[in-house]
Amino acid sequence: MNDEDRLRELFCEQFADIVESLPVELDRTLSLDDLSLDSMELLELLTLVEDEFGIEMDEELFAHCTTLGEMEDLVLEQIRD
Image (tube, rainbow, N blue to C red; front, side, top):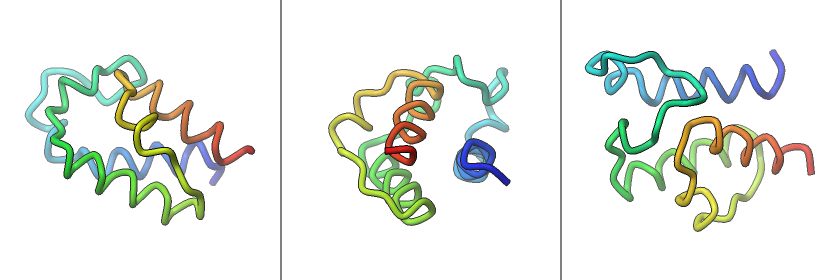
């Protein structure tokens, strides 16, 4: 499984309960506002991503993502650096 697939799986697992209650699918265009994540949930997601990929992310950059696609791109860029 490549990094993109691993990241998508992590997001799907993390957002499973939220996505079930939404009328949309989990895709790159999904607004993070639609997921209604509070700051603690974002921090938890950041920690999961860092642990899964053995990277350190800039918390401020991570928190400023507005769509799932932006978040994926940021993480994948960090993985590749």
